[in-house]
Length: 91
Image (tube, rainbow, N blue to C red; front, side, top):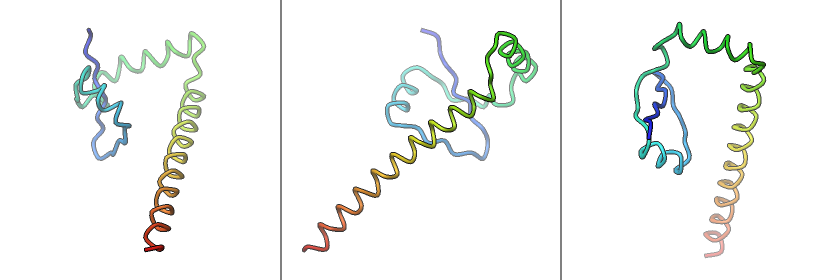
């Protein structure tokens, strides 16, 4: 099985679901790769555009999905806190 490398960017925080962390620990390594092979990465971006991949659209789609997922998790957290508050108030 090939090893995957998760990009690590200095001065950033990444939030990952537990399942992702578990999969990462089984199959990946952590390495600073955000600024490695910059020339090759540029060629990849050009090649993606040449085959019709609209990376700005991909980025917007992923951002929207990420925000929606965060919003859903946050709403669940608030509901749990409100429920806990109700329980504590009735004591």
